Amino acid sequence: MANTASAKKCVRQSERHRLHNKYYAKTTRNAIRALRNTTDKESAEANAPKVYAMIDKLAKMGLIHKNKASNLKSGLAVYINKL
Image (cartoon, rainbow, N blue to C red; front, side, top):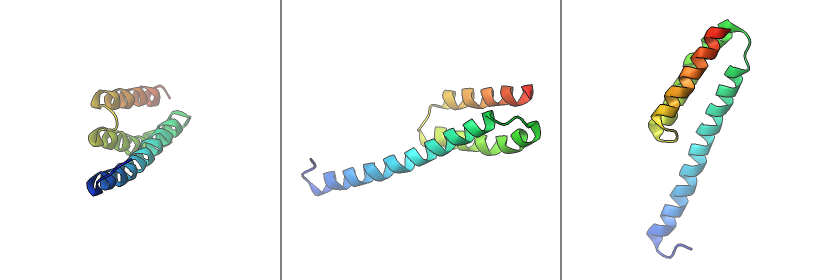
């Protein structure tokens, strides 16, 4: 357990950051899942920029690697083009 005041503060901040990161990661995963389950090309094309922005934000925050973000966006683009 943390002994010093700064260590206790670090524990509090880490928990707050963990929950914040978990929220954004889960929200993005749900958006990707919803986009992949879409069968209408027009709605998929309309929602794609929002999902791409969410993925880019995760990469910028360091929650996912930039190459993983690129691969996710590429896979979604391929899916949308096949519709």
